[in-house]
Length: 154
Length: 366
Image (cartoon, rainbow over the protein chains, first blue to last red):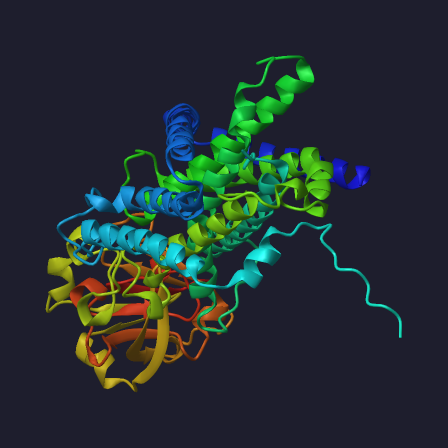
């Protein structure tokens, strides 16, 4: 494994340095914008997006009944992803009058519908959980050590 | 209270993210080398939908990586605040490599997502920056894998949840993983319809609905290309040259030549694609008029003023393909001005940006 790791690291450094060389061949103004964009993306994620998600998660964990938490957490994650994907299309900032074939959907309606579907799945899931499908739940709650005894030899 | 974060989650989501990044990187390189031909690289003309699939995968894997990155960074976020903040040189190196990794991946995913929506808010020319940073990201992923390999292997061999967690009600790590796969599925379904026709109606966040003149979307309009007058001019001629030999064709001349019809996809680098029925003159027949060699590359020159995509070189392999057309019709109608009237190139398995529109000259290269 050590050899694999050394090879991976060397390949990684080589490929990464090639990227750095390609980047530095671009005009200086471009390089500055690229690096600024990359660093700002990290800062926005680490110091705004992640804390916000963590705070919502923490509040949800405290305030919500434990039975609801799983489907709500999954719905929240899906919603976050849908909102991120909607950012570049929602207000159609890239729209140009000469080409009506780009950004040609009703994105507010689209986002709303997608979110509605996601959140409708929550009560549906909770209702389905109440159906008597106990066998699955039993299996779900078993750990790796819950092994039935070997049947007796005949 | 169970801890949802943990190496079990990080490693599993990391493997999925690694796969998505690998697919994205390789398909991106293919697209780059098709557009910037290299002597050691040859791109086949069959199957005709090959580029449609690779570029569709490029955008789809990039979009699938977004939820994976969100969850993966969530799973390790508290490590950001671990003490000591700086530590020794080894720790500094590790933190530095992670910064490069996260920054380059976020750069690639955000600029790619904005670019397919044609929102050029980053204010730099997209392709070379996206290309250069792809290597930085790929290199950082490899270094990260080298550092974490033993931890990843151990984590994948262990159960996802603590065994003592058996009677726990509420989300556990398995929930996190299931939620992640669901989020990947949701992200794919709401965007992939711009290249997977069956998903078109449900892809509510795709930058394109797939609609357009004659049933095909447009990337560069005739207005943007500035060809409104020249394309419709009665003095329009398509000139085909091979060294000193030269032939000029009016639109009627082209229509009088034997016509062929093929169903070929047009696949944009931005990840949308559409199949359509193209009718026109087989390029080989046109090149025969100037005794063009089947082993020669061919330059396509547009009426559009010189720019990055107004002249392209068609490799000999594509030029001699019997399905490569100089199209005059699209889906049974005279080519729409936005689709390249009077005539355009349509070749199998090529990026849309190289399917030159509003052709004015075809030059057999020596």
